[in-house]
Length: 413
Ligand code: HEM
Image (cartoon, rainbow, N blue to C red; front, top):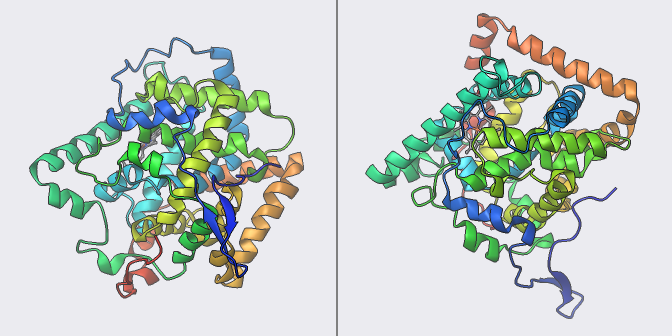
């Protein structure tokens, strides 16, 4: 199985047996050249909600939907693991911090449960049929995106300092509630050992400042398509999909190309247009030129939003762990987590190793795959039926992070 592979740059020798990474100046790769230009363009093209893309192949779309329903467990895990990647990009993370809809464990639980419920409808009904649940959710999500973009843009104009304060936990009144410890700095050290900086890409993205950036732009949208489809298309076995599935995976990429279109992504920025091969090429280049370098820049906002996300998920999917998923993801994308994993307790390491054993080994058995899917659907049904009493208790639960002293900044990046 091919995983993330080597980063651009090679190891040279300093003498005395010490090795340093020699970084060549890297250009933006061909497959991403258009997509990164999307940073300058608003994320919603304004396309009519009931008009399918002109290139839609209905039969392929429905085959891709059927594949997604049948493999929901694998898709869900790959999507959650991909958020570890997507939150490395300020354009993805800062709007979520700004709206404050997923900044605590309970809020995050509700936000992502709702997300899963909505995305599921895109695999179950016709998104262009007025009144279908897929259609309604497409409209609602576009509404959320437009509302968030509008409030960010307005604040950028009227009060840029407040916007900067409200898109990070580091500067505002939320310091005491930031879930961040010393371990994650090791992630950045691991990344430094296996990836070069991404100056060429950074020069195009210019994405650090929420005031000057176009909020929820076409690049951000494209990167979110990657989150829903890139890892699963490129490393299916890492996520429990076995056998020759290229035809199904190609159909699945078509589903995401079409969903992206209807959420307002223009064709030149569409991560999935061109099918499986194009998606895989873009995914590999994304990992090499954007993701591995960006793992050098992990910070407390990134860590907090992910820890509350994973803790929220664990309220309805027992055993989900941020540390274990991070180890697994780093291995998948080609950043060996030696320093990070080296200082974890035995529990998360055991979970990370078991993940590999289960997904790459046990999931080869078709009946286990069926069981895993049934389980994830059963968990969702239970979560959707939780009583008001249970929710109130979950909302009031307190977490260790609420009492953590304000930690220093990471030194590493
Ligand atoms: C293909 C691209 C995308 C898809 C499929 C997608 C999907 C979704 C879904 C399903 C929801 C509904 C969540 C709920 O029910 O509470 C949502 C809401 C939202 N999305 Fe997206 N999204 C995409 C891109 C983005 C991007 C690039 C951003 C930028 C950060 C973003 C920010 C938001 C925000 C701010 C909300 C409102 C809820 C909140 O404040 O957390 N989305 N999105």
